[in-house]
Amino acid sequence: MQHYLNIKDAGDLETCVSEAIALKQHPVKFKTLGQGKTICLLFFNNSLRTRLSTQKAAINLGMDVIVMNFGSEGWQLEYEDGVVMDQGKSEHIKEAAQVVSQYADIVAIRAFAGLVDKEKDEADMVLNGFKQHAAIPVVNMESSVGHPLQALADAITLAENKTIEKPKVVLSWAPHPKALPHAVANSFVHMMNLQDAEFVITHPKGYELDPKITEGCEIINDQKKALENADFVYVKNWSSYTDYGKVLSQDKNWMMTQGKLGNAKFMHCLPVRRNVVVEDAVLESDQSLVIEQANNRTYSAQIILKKLLETL
Ligand code: CP
Image 1: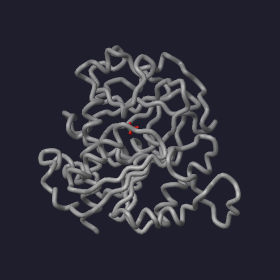
Image 2: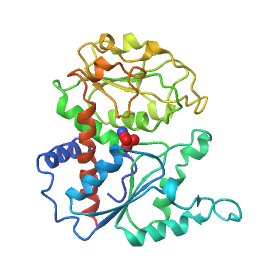
Image 3: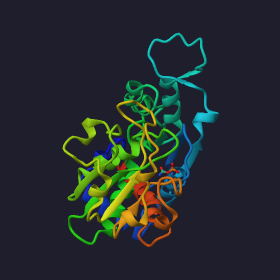
Image 4: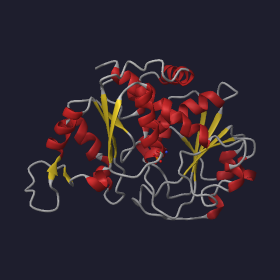
């Protein structure tokens, strides 16, 4: 693996999940692998889980960690070629990526979608800028279009909790007061397309995800019908893709409740707004897997960093 930008970069998903579960049993078994190696984590946006779990994963592998809140503390970066940089942006990605490459052996980046310009977001300028100009492996800690470390953690959680070979997994849209990116939902769909499962997506009309990503997926707009006989329900808000970045509806009827969940397990990447996205009773029930999903973020990051370290 040269970079980890998309879940497909991890190779065979089932093997990768098994390796991550084995690491979870013996987290410091490869403590010498990362000795003398440094990972640099660059955050253009806020984080709790990604920041701490990726640091923990690197520490488990014996690496040193440098963290920078680039969004608030770094120079504003220019990404376009040939620009006269006489406005607000002080540094070009070409220099920044090469400079970071001298301080670290792996760079991991979080840079969300702006949700204003679809074309710009889909170009994933920050992540791809580092991929193009850095001399070291790049890890996606959530970009404009994907969150593959989250999707790998979700795959680990599904594998640990499924009781039948081919479970029914439903990805259900939920209301939210703010416009949120599509990255988590996109990567969850990518990951589910690599699983042996009955996979259904449900959302109100107008909340279709990128049709290139959901091609071939079963989509049911009736949430009640979609949830019938579900084994796992993954709840997530995303803003409109067609009417790009807009909040079209905050319909409370789409909030996940104990009644709708039935006997299914509940999943969410966190952070989650209680009693907006999901009611308290669900989060506080034994059916909620959200804390275990967050725990598995360490092992999804650790298996990816291990694979990258093995190539250095
Ligand atoms: N799920 C997730 O990526 O959490 P953070 O935004 O807190 O990192």
